[in-house]
Image (cartoon, rainbow, N blue to C red):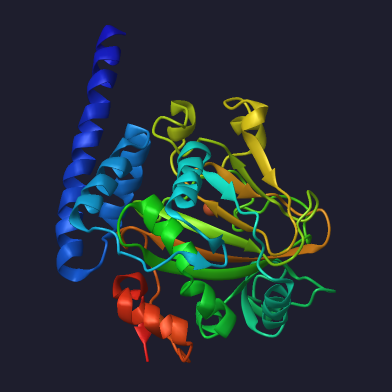
Amino acid sequence: MLLKKKLKSWLKPLKVLINIISLLKGSFFYKKTGITSEKAYLSLIRLYCLTNGCSNAFLSWLLKLQRHPYILPHANGVLGDLDSAKILRVVQEIRKNGYYVFDRLLSVDICDKLISLALIKECNLKGSLDSNLNISVYDRTNPIAVTYWLREEDLISNTDIQKLMADLSIFAIAQSYLETQPILDIVAMWWSTALTKTACTDSAQFYHFDMDRIKWLKFFIYLTDVSSDNGPHCYIASSHQIGGKPKELLELGYTRIPDKDIAKFYPTENFFEVTAPKGTIIVGDTLCFHKGKPLRQGDRLVLELEFTNSLFGGSYQKAKLGNSNNSNLSESIKNYSRVFQKFILD
Ligand SMILES: [Fe+2]
């Protein structure tokens, strides 16, 4: 018994050491090739779980030292005309709770235009009724999958989305939270439907934390009204902080967790459901435990922009940024090239 206890006490530091070595090797390889090996990525995740967040915080600190933030001419955009005090308030709120919901809405006109776009473009299906059918245009009267994911290239060629990609108010919040020059690594938009009315693992409808990168910040924009019945974004406040996750849950690894299991560890006042009208912009660090609540009726369309401090981590697809005749975007690409390094420019 004593020997078992002694062995256990040695096992964790040994695991930490093995994963640090693997991560170091992986980071040299990444520096040379721009590719993260599967082994190094798994070590990033394991170290997060073993250190309850300290490893990612340390890596972010190193990245912060390497590259100072851009100096922006202003932070005026879709989130309002933000001064440094307002930016600080938002960032402090995200650091404390993990999330912040902006008062300012995206205009109904733009929401409607994006809904129209999302009803004519082909989507990749998740949780499809027919396992042989993976691509389809979404029919609101006849859903055949739990979620419908628009293709990134169809999104980034849209002028309204390009304006958001170049929006300096969004950029200022991302940069201030990440404390270094951000990289825009995801532009996504998807429909969630009430097809099954039960949680779908593929569609992120169980609580989980994201871990594709070292640090990131997501902007979610509701493009349809979201009530408790049609898939509000749910999160557990402060669970993104160092030490914010109980070891019993971290020992499960990088996985999806049923509501009843997660409810044992957090008080009910930490559980938030973001119900809000169309146009609402939510910013979140999805290191927090979070999920999309399964829909009971209707549907929900969300647009997401993610900024990160490094592309080290999970694999990602480069995307061709065509039709970049949007002057704001062209200007941003010229001035802030690191932000758009994931994209192949025309
Ligand atoms: Fe997620």
